[in-house]
Length: 188
Image (spheres, rainbow, N blue to C red):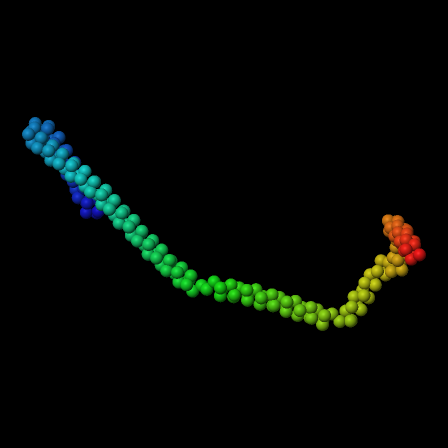
């Protein structure tokens, strides 16, 4: 490519020289010599055009070659990936993988249960009677400070069944006595 560019630049310099010579010869009145140089100028310009076309064609060929190399590289990469995927698929035993996953889940559940049991055991071991008594004493102290005792709470609590419950109890008692009366008639 560089050689073509150098040659084209050489021809362009020749073209400029030829134009200057044609002008000089025309001023001097040498028409025949000027016409010969005009033919040289036409040939030089034609060569310059050919060099442009040749360079364009070479660039197109170079681009095609680069594209082909890229396609070949992609093909190689895809072949490698396909082979790797095939190997992985052959190595992967789906039933075995399912068994492994089920075993993992089972072991995980067992570990969770053991962890919970250990936690409960530790909690029970750490929480002694002293803590329970101390906790009750603190609670009682707080309640005393607030002036609340269990007896006063109980005095304020309503006694007896709620109103709706009383009506239901009366109905139940009435239904019960009715059943007893029927039963006694059957016995007679």
